[in-house]
Amino acid sequence: MAENVSREQIRQAYKISDNDAPTKMIPATKKININEDGRPLKVCAYCRVSTGNDEQLSSFVLQQEHYSHLAKSHKNWDLKRVYADEGISGTSLKHRDSFNEMIAACRRGEYDLIVTKSVSRFARNVVDCIALARELKNLNPPVGILFETDSIYTLSEESELKLTLFASIAQAESEKKSESMNWSLNERFKHNKLLTPELYGYRRPRDLSGHYIKYGILEIEESEAVVIRFIFDAFLAGFTLERIAELLTEMNVKTKLGNTNWNAGSLAYIVRNERYCGSVLTWKTFTADIFEHKKKKNRKNRDQYYYSDHHPAIISVEVFEAAQSLIYNRRHGMRGGLHIMQVIDEGVFQGYVPINHHWANDDPNAYYNASDSVDGRKIERRIRRSAFSAFDLTGYQVVRGQFLTARSELPCMTISNEKIMFNTACGKKLQDYSYIQLLLHPTERKMAIRPCERDDAFCISWRKQKTGQPILIKTLSCPFFIKALMQIMDWNPEFNYRILGTWIEKGTDCIMTFNLTKAMPIAEIINEEERESIRKRRMAVCPEEWEESFGDEFYEFSMDNELYYLKSVPNLQSGIKCRDVEGQQQLSLLSHAEVLESAAKIKMGVTGADE
Image: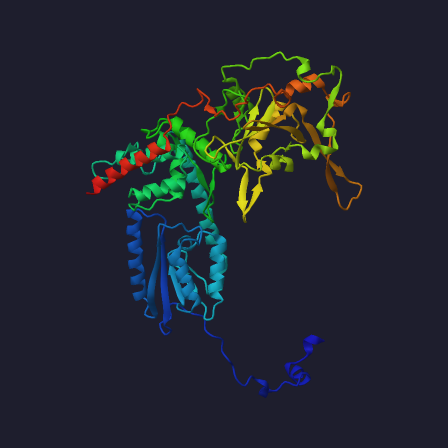
């Protein structure tokens, strides 16, 4: 029935008349036609070359000429500017200064059209390419991009699909190229084909035409090599990199760039560079992301190859390794030059080793070897029991200080797995001294504290002035030493260990001793009764060997503390200076005075050369 309804019946049903036609048609804005002569377009062009060699730069000039001719062939094109980036990768928008300047100008409405060779020249990152094309298209007025060889114009209806396809291909090409380059680099590194850059102290060899020889071996530049040797000598002698930089600046020594302003950063690069000892380590850093171009330190992410004796060395391998050891120790707070183990030859502290609490070494053998290097041995003396007491106290015990309520008045040292903490009694006993030495006898398993001078080896600043009041040091951070001590004592690193000390004064001698074998373990107890707030507290743990006694046998205790109890003991000679342990260091290190003398000679040479 619906098929028999006439058009007139429909017109009558919907009350449609011939007068219902639109009064006026408002036409849509015509889309920009880049080939339409009637509408002028403000045009810019963009070109990019991937590398900075002569061949590519020649291509760059040709591209500029091409866009000038292209603009002339379009009467409505007004070519305002050709933007160009030379030697910049297209996988990221970072560092592409001309490109970013062009986009900013488009946002300000300065252009209607960007002309470029291809999608791969514009951007090799799909996300960046699509996002920028959409942003420019949505500007008012819109800005189009014409990719010549790809025949894509972004203001046309079908452009985005084609743009996405071509941008994906360009990105895949970049990823494939990156993979190929990484393979090529690895093969070259593996077969000793090293492109060693020229660095301060060396020159790359050139051929007769003046070009660098591709795999040429570095040659020493002696006028700069003498400065490199000075830097390493001063560093190992204890000068900071900042102080060495000041000296070189004062000496008017020219840097690699030709100026005379040195800084600690450039010196840090020098003292870490293995090439100065004739070696080469490949692939120290790598580009983790080809789009962000972020470099990362190679931590076994890429294969590395180490070549020794690759080129003439300016410094010895031993000097370089010593510098690396010093760098590592300074990172943990050690001051001065290369660490040299020391020991005390005579007196009450014979065989004791002064502790450098900043030294990054946890090998207990270093302390044993230093202590055992002392030639003489303590003479065992026979002492009558009556010297300690008029009564026979055989079988009696001296109650351990840990069990006494007055123990807080005794010097006490607590050792955790990272720190050594001293109680208030230690501070009071040593409050008149600004500097102390912390000593260890690994065989006797004893530690001691003695006052010292500021210039003594491994002195510790014990008292500091703050707002006029002396502040006593109560904590020393020394994780490496404690790790060695835990091994010496066979202690559990999960426990703290509290050791009561003995303060001894005889004449001018003032010392504090700690018998490590008498340490009381302190365990951390976690109370989980209240689930909402877990509380932690520390509890003293009675060692197994203390189970059947309250203290030490009287005469054994008296012999261990004979210095305190016997008036007949002569002068303790506690202030005997330390000496270097022989045979531990094969390097001939310069003194501070010799370093400054060397600096004066270099300065004279520089002044003479300038004249």
